[in-house]
Each structure stands twice: as structure tokens, then as C-alpha cells.
Amino acid sequence: MKKPPAVTGANLENYASDWSLEEYSREEGLRPVEAELVTEFFPAPPARVLDLGCGAGRTTGDLARRGYEVVAIDLAPRLLEMARVRYPSLDFREMDATALEFEDASFDAVLFSYNGIDCIHPVASRRRAMAEAFRVLRPGGHFILSSHNVVGAIFSGGYFYLTGYWNAARFLVDQLGNRLATSGYLRYRDGGGVQYLYSAPPGRTVRQLENTGFEVVTLRGYRRDSSPGFIRRRVQHVHFVARKPSSP
Image (cartoon, rainbow, N blue to C red; front, top):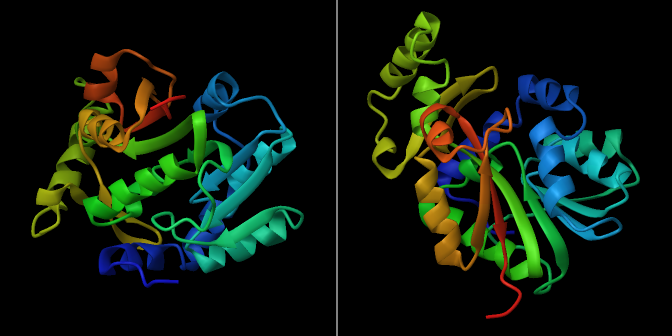
């Protein structure tokens, strides 16, 4: 397997920490907006689903319980080890989302949850991951992913929420000296360390998907908001549903 770019590799180190192992193995099951989108746009089980960036298996286990035939991949070995412990009967593989080892049109649906695609650097590799999802998806199939919205990250607390302004100010100060910010990669800190994650207005991700060949069907917020203006201004983590056309 080819070594990932330096920034992507540094991001992966975050997921090798004890904090990340505990944090990402605590939660189980699809989140409400994810479950809603899967129910609405994925074909009925036992369709074949590719779970990209599966981490410790939160989404994989739920998809399998729903009756889907799931193949799950990630590049974080410690999280994959935990996923295999939690769900020993499921198919977990260490694999790069930018170079999928699957045949063309071999999945009925693809999921890339919890902003996992934002870990991939640079933007060209992010686009390559989209192109790979497009390639392995059958015509008419849907790709569900989520991504950081930089405007929503600043104003998600609301315009009259003082703590929200404080958090936004700290976030902006944390970008000082971040040379990757001009290319859309902002600095985030958590208990696992520092990550540089792609963060841009949702329209950029829409254009990236459309340039790959997808038709963007809908955008949703974590609270299942669907108003484009509200999502653009107030939602920090935006969900995108993209469809591979049935014919060229």
C-alpha cells in the first residue's frame, strides 16, 4: 500500500492515540441524520454497501444489523483492530479511499461518515477519493458523505450566543500560522492531538462532486435541516447525498 501524503499521515496519527481509540469505540450505530439518509436513499437490504473511513465500526455494525452486505475500510490500524473485536463477523480491511481495491460498479451504495473525507490531503486526493467512490458505485447508486462547513463552524452557536462567539474566536486564533488554511485545511484540536481537516463552504464540495460526475441530490444538517441558506450559514457538519447517473 502506498504511503499517504504527509498531512494525511499526520492526521492518521491522531487516530492511533489512546484517546481516539476510547472516543471512537464508545459510540455505536448510525446517527439520526445518517439513519434517515440511509433509509431514504440506499436500496433495500441485502444490497452491497461500502463503508469508507469506518473507524471502530460504529456505522458498519448498524448497516450489517439492517441486513446490508457491508465491506468496511479505513487506514487507522488501531481503530480497525477495535472494529474487528467489536464486530468479529464483519469484513474490515485496511485500505486507502483514494485507491480502492475493488472492481468497477461493485457496490450498490457508498457511505463516508463523520467528515472522514476531510482527513484526506491535498484537495487533489480528496477529489480522487470521490472519483474512486464514483467508480466502484453501480449506476443509479447513492454516495452519502459529510464534510466541515467553515462558515457553520464559526456561527453554529447562533448569532446571539456569546459562548458561540468565544468558541469561534478561539477557533480563528488557532488558525494563526496555519499555512494550509489557504487551501481549505483548518487546524482542529481534540484529545488525540492536532488534525488539519478540509473545511469550506458546502458549495465547494458540491462542485467537487459534480465535477466527478455525481448529481448532488440533497444537503442536510445534523438536525436534519434542509434549508440551503440555513445549512450554509449555521451548520458545521453538512451531509451530502450524491447520485451516480444511471446512464452517461
